[in-house]
Length: 632
Image 1: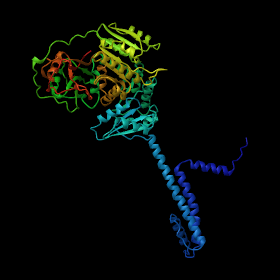
Image 2: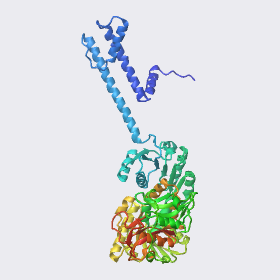
Image 3: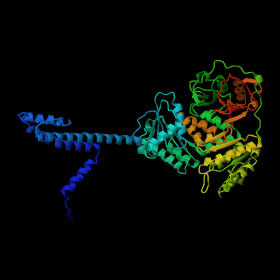
Image 4: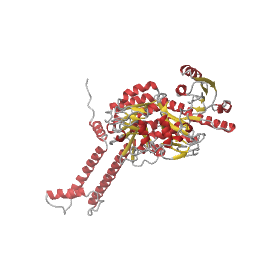
């Protein structure tokens, strides 16, 4: 087949277009060549027509060079009209060249700044924390990491999400506030892309947190992100990978994708456990929040050679401003609240609740405790409970299952929710699957309707759980928290009419709506996203604590209880907290704090005091609650 030769003109234009497409460097090169093509010939004519020019050829070439070098000046040549016109021409060429060069440099700078705003440059950090994804947990995670890094001189947090970089920075600045010494770095791109993920330098990171999205595809995206992390070169030897999935069926896959250093949290199960615990023991959420954030006292592991060979009970009594609550064995496993006679062997580390890892200092000689202040005997036996559950979502079945494990035999769970055709069947399945110690009934009704809520006799229940119901087609409430807030308003009206306080546990999806909740100060208002964010941050700083938190949120083993102060010390009398600790120790429990009945109406703690000074004396009220770690 005969090929026709392309004419020279189009070929030259194509070659020129291809060259220009190479970028700013090619543009500057062409501009320089075009200017020289004009400046050098015109300078040559000026020199050869100048009667005062040197007679020798080198002299004339030198004069041409001077003219070419002085082209940036605006004219100045005098003489015949032709010389003046040529001088002006040189000035115009110089003006064109300088202005074009400036514009090209400006365009290149703007292009570079635009690329930086897109957040696609590589993060060159060491020992930094990497946050992958964007969800409701991101504000909590970043805020807690900043607090944890407050005593470090050089700390960095790198956030990667498929969002606009400028928007991420603005939202974090609004919700997190001051970052102190920590540098906050945002990068834009999908975390499931290994090429993009490699820009975050995961191999040199100290911790990597993969955030879940509260969507049906959120779990698979977490798994893909963990796989992309491995494809991007993996993590450093000391990096801790913490991720969260919604449901149990994706946990095994996520664990395999995360590798041996990974820690996977199951958000729905943890939230359900905490809601169930709070329904039976008001204030549990506040205790967990105090233990999980970095602003107060939290868990640490410390080595104390002076206590080697002594019993765990001796270790509990030895600390005056810290609470020993367990042992970490040499193999990394934890024994939470072991028997008091357990011997602390060489290689064991003590698990303590304290302000910082350097504040756990045992006293030389523990202060004696007055035996007359201690109450002997086991805690009172729990009676059957009546619990009202308002609303239904995917976690409701898990909550009912946890209540069947926690609640004493003979307890009742009444469910009131809109019957959308599937809710009634789901409740029946739950009632058939849970333990026989809990009776479950279902009553269809709109929990935002005054007639429905006022007809429930809510004051007759021991606790009321209000769930964040999902919004469906045709519903007037778009945000799940909108229905929750409307239900809480009706419950507050029920309280006023009955002249009593309801024990209400509220589940919310957005922490910003928590301050809007019309509940009394200090009520359990659980934001599952904030809880998971706090857990992820704690584990990212010490991966071994994952086992501790898993047991605390499990229905078996050790967990946190709030029990009457009268079960430990004589009420109405002054006693140091050391007496409470000793009384709890004899019952096989670890006392870690208390919640005062006469608590303040405002403030972040609402009467909860974790790790008080054991020497501090206070008068104990019968309505005070002692916070202990004990068996379920």
